[in-house]
Length: 336
Length: 168
Image (cartoon, rainbow over all chains, first blue to last red; front, side, top):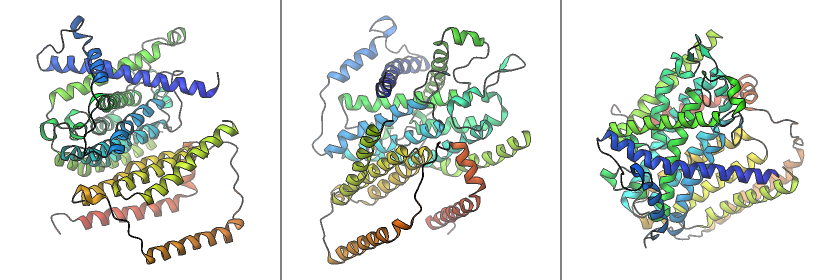
């Protein structure tokens, strides 16, 4: 096949993963949050409400697409795409297995962060274009949040890059093969040096992907739905699809960085060769376990206030992550 | 990539860069102008990518598109008191015209005069990877790198001092 056809097929595969992930995550969110709130969640459509999400997709697709009169028409139409496309691009560097990946970028980690940093621009665009105070507030919060937390997010994972000596996500996963004492997997989360790294990564990535304790840009208790207030039908659908997809991406990155990616040390290497589907399956399952924890956090913690969050970012996380880079640099140098 | 494909992609990115810059100047709406600036930055990152400068392209996206453009947008949106203020009247002035002409003439002169004296650029046979780039930056270019980071540190401290804490 020509390289262009292969590229197009890979893009379609990423879109498929993104759409499927959206449908699964909405159902999972309702069920998990329902369980945390001691209720059932959707029950009517299909067994245990399984088809509820499909019904919602049909509803979104067939709803009237309203464009309010006062909006900035071009930016209003462009904004959902500006949110959707970077989110889709972020799938390109994820290592689903040693052979299943869209591209193997040398700077895969940096690439993922770079494209994810474009998402809040789309949110800001949506907020401005909507000509609505709540929307603008939501957009401004998204931008402020992103400027504050992009720095600690990037800095927090640098110790791993320093240890592995590569920013290629596949190489980072390969550095976590094997076991300690034949039982414990040799994942970076088992290394005490990376425990603060992990905490920093979890906080900063929850903020960057707009997950609930930090979703000030749409906090419905204060600003209705923030940047999404004026959006309806599939434009709204695209905005939310990207949000679920960003959750998937930060969880997948966390799996690749800290939890050994596609590998499980107890499975012999010959199995991977026999059934190449095992690697991606393990990767996806681990990612969904990560998402489950994100939903748990979402169902447990109240939303923080915007000024508290800015203070946490600028005054705490950035100095801590800088100090931790210096410390782990010394430790890695002394060890090796 | 074949010559034709990269040629077409180059034309698209070049058109996006120059067209975006023209649109940024031509639009009356300052918010639109900021978004056009963002588009120019992204298209420039595409041009870097075509030159196999992967790292430079990513940093361009991360720093210029991801942060500088957001900062510009943020400033514009915070300083606009009313939404209608975003649309500025078209105010041609002699001073601006003369300044623009002089600048254009200076650039043209510089290109005419000095471009031929530059050593011809050659593309390396293989693209250096990220690790090699880091090594070069921290060995051969360590002093300029440190000076640049010192300048940025001074700017950072200055910004903190200027914005003022409770003590000042």
